[in-house]
Amino acid sequence: EELRGKGYEPYAYKWDRTHTTKELQERYTHLENGEVCTEASVSIAGRIVARRAFGKLVFMTIRDDSGTIQLYCEKDSLTEEQFEQLKAFIDVGDILGASGSIKKTEKGELSVYVSFFEILTKSLLPLPDKYHGLTDVDKRYRQRYIDMIANPEVADVFRTRAKVVSEIRKTMESFGFIEVETPVLQ
Image (cartoon, rainbow, N blue to C red; front, side, top):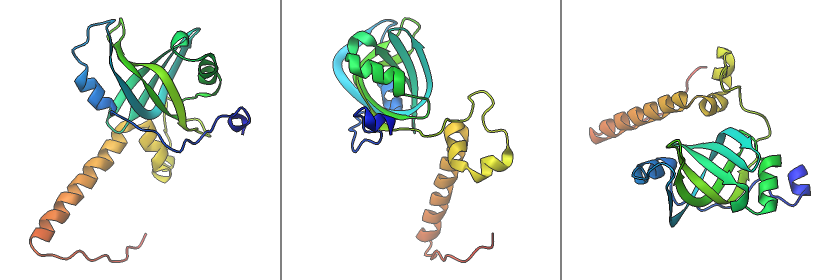
């Protein structure tokens, strides 16, 4: 409600992504430390998993289905209004769309040098603690969606299982079998 009161839409209607984080990591490995690639603008989207603010500079790490990348947000490259929005309203767990050029920081971290961003989805509740995570096993099973956000390895297990089941299904169909769904007692 506070975002809407300030004129920001906390749930965007559309964002055009040009690259995934994995595509960016593979495509721009040749950049030297401190080098900026201004020839092409990129547009990415993902969930914020880490956020660090230092005065006129904000670093965020976002994760999508393919990996993670750092967002490099400098006060000089954003409008005053956007930088204030970034500092006041953007939290870990939000889904953010960002566009800008590619830069490799002095420490060698590939980053998107953000010139524009938009909140795609505002997280209403904070994510589990980064270091302690979800320790309650029952809660991990009941709230799989949180477990998969907090632990990318769990999401990888689900992806692998889905691929295995899909391949088994294709193989059985190639032999002429028909899939029949039967009730399962829980």
